[in-house]
Length: 267
Image 1 (spheres, helix red, strand yellow):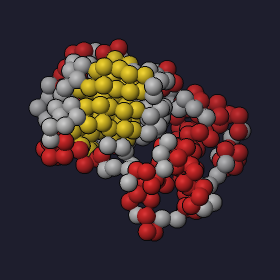
Image 2 (cartoon, rainbow, N blue to C red):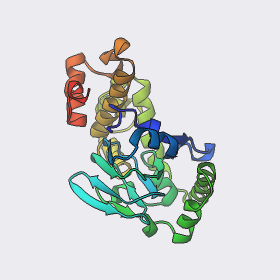
Image 3 (cartoon, rainbow, N blue to C red):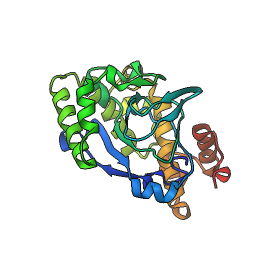
Image 4 (cartoon, helix red, strand yellow):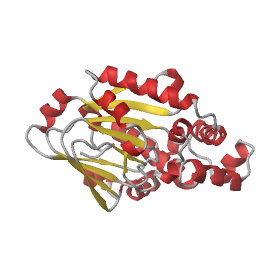
């Protein structure tokens, strides 16, 4: 299954974070075992995710799986939990007993909570016990249900956030993202910098420090991800100009650059 092209969300349950975490965490999710069994049955399957520069924690509540981060393959066993940045295409090759709990951070949110720049994650797959004590991980994994796991995560993340007060760079990056979205994703980097009263060099420096890539690349990814999602959901009323594209040809070209796949080949 490939995100955006396929509805991979149907395999998972989702909860949005506590208000105090909403600027930093996009969502919590966990495999919906009944839905997954219905879909997967007795076959191995692959989940493919496109770049987003969103730090993501995967707690393994099920069987071992193989993880491809770009061109690098990692074997993740039953007792291993990982942190990835999603700066490249990621694929998880899963067994039918797959059961994953996800914490997906917003750009810069991971650094604000943990005090560690997401740029240090880069293209690595980091064992979660290098970041969080084993007893905390075990307590969360042994919780009786999804809702309890989410509550334990929220308590832990809020406690970590209270000890880390450096949020200036994150604020500026979030402000620029909000401004870009409010302008219909049509602003160039120079126009965006001018809009938020910041020099273009400073904007580039902030993004590379917080996100791990420059604003031009990040906004190209954000535009492609948002537009392609809308196209797949509502093709009949989709307008490329609503997302800053000149025409459908421009949109199609950028989709290929983003996914490596032509839309027609995905169907």
